[in-house]
Amino acid sequence: MVKAKVNFHTIGDLEEGKEYVDYKVIRGDVINDYKLERTSIDVMDVTHYKPDLFKLGFTWTNDPNRSFSSDEVQDKEVIKEYEEGLIRIIRQENPNVAEIKPFDHTIRQ
Image: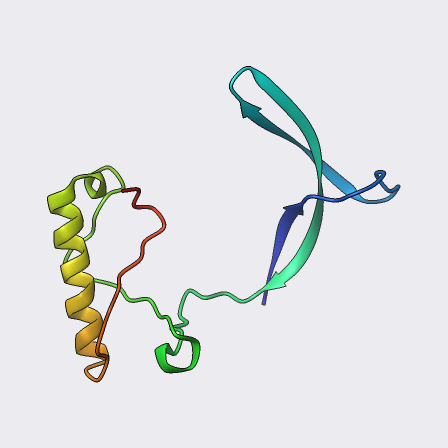
């Protein structure tokens, strides 16, 4: 396990002895200031972990032949190449899967 810090919204008064961080939400010309409570949690180091597709319904993979920058994956043709490559790799690793829908949270379409 690895120690990590998370910040989360709280309701009510700030409590003595707890750590808080400043947080701003800007909408147009309105700025809302908040305090988020910070706490330490134990998280799993997933550097060498591969989720079981059949147990969890998702997995991730790595393409050792090609990498894409976040700027590149804004282009529709590059996104197509990227997703086709992911599908190919995942299909090689899981030949019995009927449908694969790639998802990458860094791609905004």
